Image 1 (cartoon, helix red, strand yellow):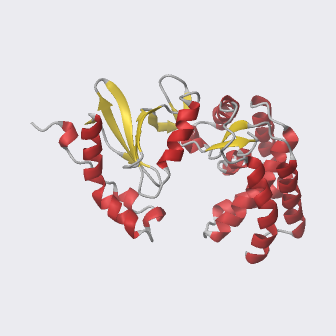
Image 2 (cartoon, helix red, strand yellow):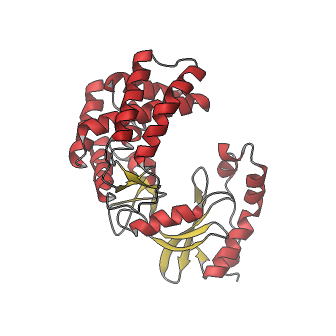
Image 3 (cartoon, rainbow, N blue to C red):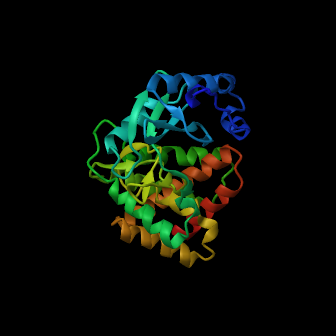
Length: 301
C-alpha cells in the first residue's frame, strides 16, 4: 500500500481560476508542477499528507503530519517574497500569529502550525469579531525592528499620490474629500509613531481559530509605526453588515477603546486608507469596494 506522502495532491480548479494567474504564464506553469513540488517538499521534510488542500488567492495550503504533529505546508509561487513573510512570522514567533516551523526560500515553502481553516473571524458575529481583531492589533504591537517600512513613509507617499491619482481616475470624490485625505496623510507622515510593530495586512479572513489560542493571525506583513494603520480595512471589509452610520461609528469607537488607539490618528488612517483603496479599486475594476470606501470617506470627513 502506498504511503500517503507518495501520493500527489490535486490543484483545485478554483485556485487555477484566481485572477493572480490570468496573465501570468510562469505562474500557470508553476501550477502544473505544483503536485510534484508538494511531494518533493514532503519527502524533504519527512511529512505525510493529511487531508484536502485549501488555497487563498496566491498560495496552496496542504494539511500534513510531521510524526504526530498536525501541520500545514504552504506553497507560494515563484516571485513571492517568502523570505519576508517568514521574517514577519519569526519576529512575532507565535505571539498572536501562526507559528512558523520551517522555511525553504528556494522552493517558496513554509511549514506552519495547523489552525482551523474552516473558522475565521470573517464568519463570526461582529459583536465577537470586532473586539477580537482589536485585541490582536494591540497584541502585535511590540517594538519593531528599525529596518522595516514605516507607516510614516506610506502616509508621505499618499500625500503626494492622492491628487495625481484623483485626477487620473476622473475625480471620483469631491475636492473637499480629496483635500481632507491629503491633509490627513500629511499629518500622519509628520507625527512620531513610537516604532511599534504593525501588521500591514490585518483583516478578518486572515484571523483563524486555533488550539493554543482562540484566534491567530496568518500571513502578517511586518511594518512599524501606527497600529491604527489598518482600521479602515477592518471597517470596509464588513461594512455592508453595518446598516447605519451610527453603527459604523460604534464599531470604530469599539476598536479604538479595546485596542487603546489614538482616536484622532485612527480617524486620519480610516480616511487615508479609504482614499488609497478607493483609487486602487477603481484602477483594478472593482465595483463594491470603491462604494464602501466612499461611504467611509463621507462619514469620517
